[in-house]
Image (tube, rainbow, N blue to C red; front, side, top):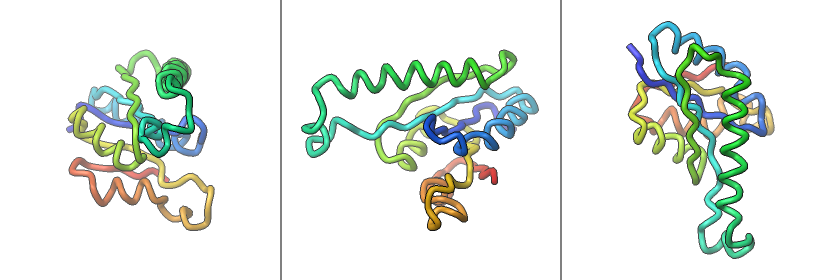
Length: 142
């Protein structure tokens, strides 16, 4: 039923993956699917934002997050799961949907919220936007 499953993670927020990762791994094993672990970086190249950072900041940020994402996969994804790391820039929910389309994933598995704010308590703004705007199936794990 599924051949490519996407797991968006915020490497700074363990709650973004602690419950969603085991679900994604189970689904990968059940369907023989590959796992695409996605993390989103803010777009530092926008003229308004970019002027506050050194010229090579985006490149260094990508390199650092790439290393961190590879470490995350090595530590948390068992060897029997085919996994790919993906880094995208922009607004989290838009970047997640864009990456899902580009990778042609069948399913996005993501956490319901990051208990940071009361407003985010029920679902969370990024998960809510992904659910409403994605053309592929989305599974929210609580």
